[in-house]
Length: 410
Image (cartoon, rainbow, N blue to C red; front, side, top):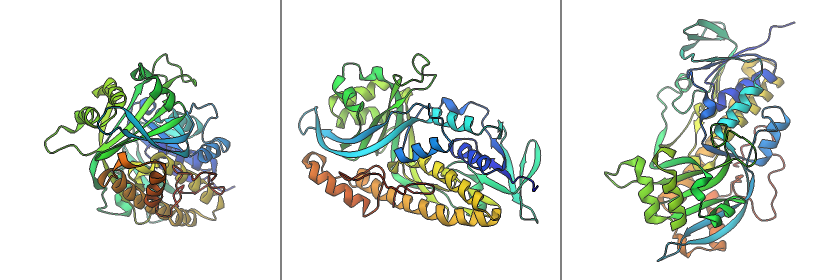
């Protein structure tokens, strides 16, 4: 019997764990190198994934069916009432999403990896190809040889430099503030809490927008429960601080100036320690695999977070990897097929993210004058003929063929 394919995965986050599950399910012997010695599951930011993808991942064994989620089916667009501090609803759109807690998603993938060798606190010092068409990973343990090496080492990927030397993420001219805060921040705001129990909210303001949605809490939150009743409020606020402003704390001032009073109060209650400020950037490798190397997740390409596809793309990368490895007939052919499919998918998402960034931050519409029809027409123009899981036309179901390798942005 032929020896099992040996796969080395650089990076043990969402993309790395998903790739490890994919390799293991395809019958490979997988080793994951994670440089951090800490438990990654404590990261509690919110993410969303398409309901059909979540269903597929549960059905195929990537995710535990008991992993808590907070599904909602509607997107509500709000802005501040002109001349006042109350909220005005602009539109409602069908937009089914399955919000998750980053840490709980990682933990579920990590558990599904089963017998995969997961080396925590083990940074990779180099990767090279040998003369036999295999890859050699060097770490403090020494050198190990693999048939395939998966670079899942994030947005600043060193593995990407092997396939695309000199390629770096291109910054956008704005920032994002992200946070996840206890629902106590909504105390005294029952209308806002009731809205969030059935929808996710986009709040438009001059120069940007904010996204608000509920996610499951992790064991480090509240009473330690991860059941359906344990929730956090996750948010992402996009904007440009004025010249000379300290970027991190500026989100509090931005909310006071532009948000309806209730939403500004919610952000203020979260406090500075609940908010992380990040630059926004994008990049796409010209080709995401060249045997024996393959890129997955943010290592392959980073799209602006408006597309809500960071974790989604990593999970789709994994499904594609499993499929091409099963189809064979050899690792080199499998990686070329992966590259054909996932390079094109990533490029489409990068372009969509740029269009969304221009429309939602750089060249925002006059929010207060918009209503349902105006928002529908405007957002269809932003999508420019593509299909994206965040926008479902009335009466339209999710794409029926959204299976392995689907981009959810066509």
